[in-house]
Image (cartoon, rainbow over all chains, first blue to last red; front, side, top):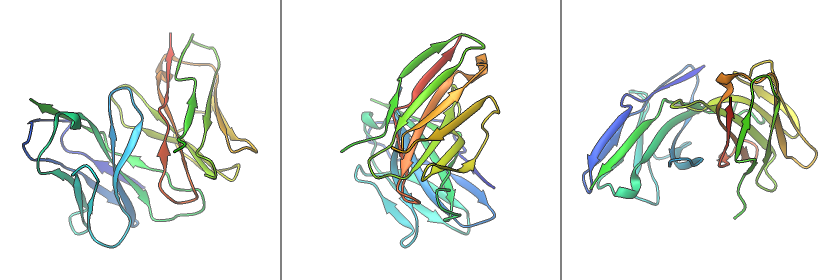
Length: 117
Length: 111
C-alpha cells in the first residue's frame, strides 16, 4: 500500500515570490510520482510526473519537482508565482506497473495555494 | 483534442434513490478509473476497468456497482443513496498503464 503526505494544507504567497509545496510518500514498492492541479469546480489536471530518468521534472508553466528517493519526497517548486497559479495541488503516487489496467493513484490531502496580489 | 466526458455534470438525488453516472473515455483508451472526492477531501480510488473487465477495486461501497461497455464507456451505478455519498465523482481514462486523464467530474448532491 502507498500513502502520501502533503504537510501544508494551505500556502499563501505573494505574487512573484517563490513557492515550495511539500510532498512525502511511503510505499513498499517503487512508485511513479505525480502532481495534479485542481482549479475551483474543475477536474484534475496533470501538472508533471516522474516515471524514470532525470529526477528533476519540469512543467510548461514554470513548475518543477525533484524526486528524492532517499527522502521519499517529491516537492513542487516555482521560482515566481502568478495570480493564475491559485489552485489546489495534489501529490499522487502509483505503484510501478502492477498489472494491466492497474494504475490507481493514491492522493495526498492537497495543498491550497493562494497567490496574493 | 478529445477529453474524458462525464455526464451529468451535476445531479441532485434524494436519500435512498439511485443514481447513474456516465463516463466516455478518450478514444482508443482502454482503461477507465472512477474516483470519489468528498468535500475538502482528496480523491479516493473506487474501481477501474481494463478492456471491459474489472481490473482493480478500491474503497467502493457494496451499494455501488460499475461496468465498462463494448464501446468503452463506463457507468457507475449508486443505489440506496446516503447523505455521505455527496461528492465529486471523477472518471479518468488511460491507454493501458500510461498517464491517466481526468474528466471534469460529476457533482452529486444527496438531500
